[in-house]
Image 1 (cartoon, rainbow, N blue to C red):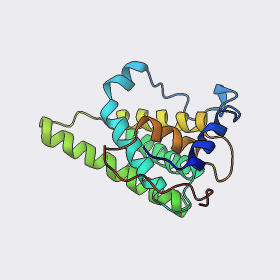
Image 2: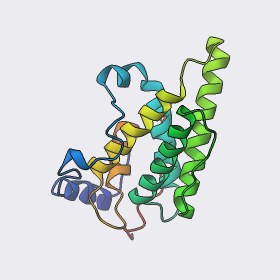
Image 3: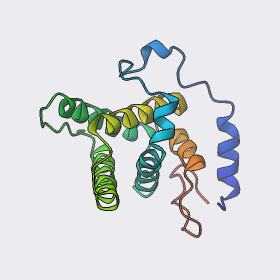
Length: 178
């Protein structure tokens, strides 16, 4: 991906940020265990969710890591109630987080519809989606540098899931002015 020189400096400066998680016992949703086996078995689901988060957040003016955090927290609450057999949607109050929430919810629905069409059955359960959301949430807590307008988590996701070849690069951070 071609990135302006300013982006390269910003990425280099993130190597000197404080770690996102100082005490893992303070992570939310620690009761939901995400194993390496789960991550390997659900790579396509995670890739779909992560690329949707990155694409939507970086193309939403003003969206930052904390907006993603709010969206993930609300989706996790929604999926926890689904796992309990209750259909109740918890939506974030933050407008930017609500947009991310909608995009991620729709991406999961589209992924599951594609899966059903291709396999003839629905393989991805609500608990699988919940575990994937918790993984992304914990990753966000790990990569978030604590800055109010920070995008370190989004940048980390972009490194793992850069998007399809030939796709236009996402809009640059609003903090960088040419």
